[in-house]
Length: 318
Image 1 (cartoon, helix red, strand yellow):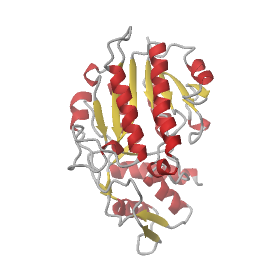
Image 2 (image 1 turned 45 degrees about the horizontal axis):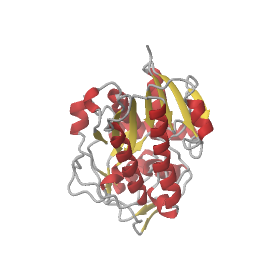
Image 3 (image 1 turned 180 degrees about the vertical axis):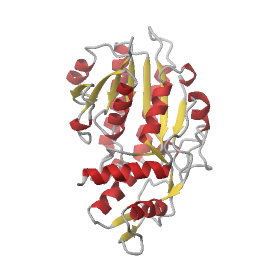
Image 4 (image 1 turned 60 degrees about the vertical axis):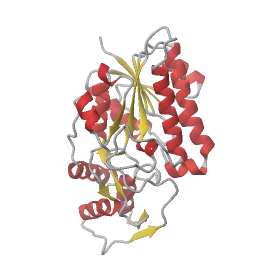
């Protein structure tokens, strides 16, 4: 019998791609999204779609009119810099929203939840690559809320007072990129921000010296990791890094993007500005735990993933 998966934030970049992969693999999917950043057109036509907020009772009651077997909890505010501008909104969505998901999961006895946590939970890493056992000292309000929600999720999975067993897994996501990442939202992801800049012939702005590094992982690889964990009992109660395991500097990223458009930093305007609060200088995931327990491996290397993303972006802007 097919399992029914609820994808919160399923009209957004990550959620809509997750939905596609789930449906392709034979799962039934319900999507809820308030469309604050997501787009209805992103949602697979074979998914049941509910426009609404995860904090709204009417919307959530509608979601659970059908039995849900698994929750992919992805919805949330996803910007470090915006979290400093409005910490209350960040807290309300990322923590209170997550608690509401937990309450509904308990009420309707949903046995499985997978949660989108964040690399920002680590703050300044002690060493690279980062293992899941490293200390978690987030330096941004966003990181604090994501880590807090992660702990709420995992603590719920440890409860022995519930009339059923809820099994939880958290994924600390590094820099996810790919098709459908907004080319116009200045807060969504550095890959799509820079591609959008070049498509519109705008200067590229780098906050810092460009030597800072990130671990870029393609959305299809992310989806494969999540889906492989659904029925994997060894993943219950665990936290996994989801990255590529490779560091790429921001300057290198800009070079790759500009080359794809037949340009270079010598003939394209690149502006360097002061680092922003909450920025993590160097990031690189140790993904050995996910490889071992989930039998997961990267299938889309950076060069291939960037080529695919840029080709998609060019089609969008035609």
